[in-house]
Amino acid sequence: MSDIDNKYRIKYKIGSGGFGKIFLGYDIETDKEVAIKTEFIKSCCSTGYLEYEYNIYKLLGKYKHISNVFLYTKQANNNILVLDLHGPSLGSIFRYHNKHFSIDTLNTISLQMVDVLEYIHSKNIIHRDLKPENFVISFRPDKIECVLIDFGLAKVYYENKEHIKYESINKFIGTYIYCSISAHNNMSQSRKDDLESICYILIYLFTGALPWYNLKTNNKKDRLKKIKEMKETIDIDILCKLCPQRIKEFVIYCKNLKFEEEPNYCYLRELLNK
Image 1: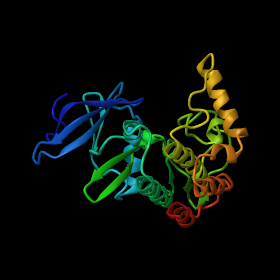
Image 2: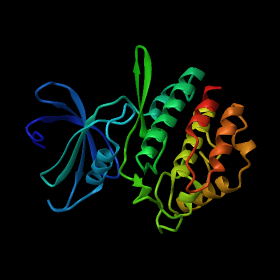
Image 3: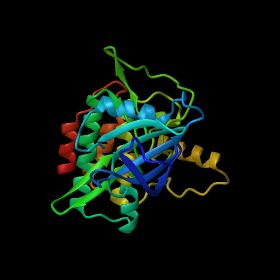
C-alpha cells in the first residue's frame, strides 16, 4: 500500500483481527510511530467496522486511557484508521509474566479499568467486548498506563434522553470467555454488562484462570453452551475462592446491578484500593 494521505507510511504488519489488519507505521514528517488499522472493502462506497469505530472515537473525545485518532480515510478499497501506538496487550504481558502480577500492579491496572469505563459510560457508550487483549499496557519509568482499545463493537446506550431497552438482539456480541450472561443470551447490553466482563478479567488476573477457561468438550458449540451454563449457575464463593475478599464484593455488586442502573464507580474504586 502506498503512503496514506502523503502523511503516514506503513512499516510492517503487527497483527490482525476480524475487521482486517494492523500495521506499525510512522508519520513521514515527524518519524513518530503510529498504529494503522486497515479493513478491505468491496467498493469505495462501502462502509465497515473502522468507519463505525472512528465515529465512536469522535464521540468519546480525548482521554488519557483511550487512543488518540489521527486520521480516518479510504484508500485503494481499504478503510484506514491511524491511531496512537501503544505497548502489548494486557493478556500477552500477563502470560509473559507466567500469569502473575504484583498486588501493586494489579491495583494500578484494575483502578484504571474502572476509570476508563466510567469515562466511556459518561459519554453514553458501552464497549461490549472487554477482555485482556483489548487493554494495552505501557510501562513507563514512573507509572503504568492502561489504554482501552477496539471500539468496533461499542454502542450508544443512552440517546435522546432514553436508555436502550432490555430485549433480544438475535445475535451474539462479545468474547465468550469474558462476556456477560446477557450477552450469552443474545440480549441487549448496558453498563452492567461491561462491569460483569471486568469482574471476569479481574478474577483471571488475580488467580491466573477462570473455571470455564479450559473446558474439554467435543466441539465448539458444546463448549460455548457449557461456558454459559457455568456462568449462570456457579456460586460466587466458588468463582472468587482464590481472590481477595474485596474482589468478591466487587463481583457481588456488579452482578446485582439493574440493567439501567448507573454504577457507583467510586464504591468500586474504594473496594480496589482496600
